[in-house]
Length: 187
Image 1: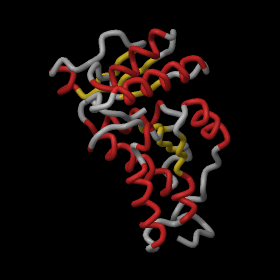
Image 2: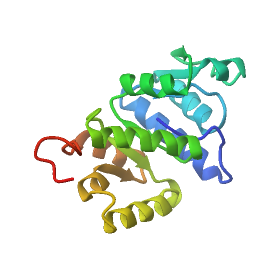
Image 3: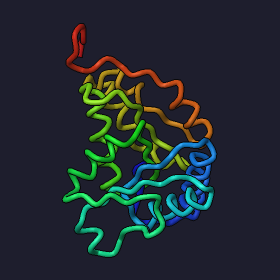
């Protein structure tokens, strides 16, 4: 799960993070995230743990030293740097969900989505569209598709839902697209 180390200006973001974390925990699924105690990251961890969910954090040493690590996780794995963090999170996760966040959330989202397109993994990538937060990005992705820079099957592979249950249902039905440069690809 990718989300902000800030909580955002509207209380709707924290509520959505809590609802999503409780829904994931209630479905018997674990959460893998960046290990932070601040912002929506902390909200997710707290809500999932309060619902008896398992929460696994992966955090670079420099952020642990900055006292940003959440103290109440099922486990916290400390890695050397941000690259190792993303790699380890991708190994642990069955899929990827981005909630509202900033530049770091976007960077993580686009990296795992690109890996999916290249066939590095065959795991779903999704957006929880809280109060229309992702709509400007989705409009840009549609423009990229219209202009021939993003193949329609990859645009369509991005799961988007505004409610936690709907998102989990869509993730369970998701089918991997053919890799961009795989055999028989027209990309």
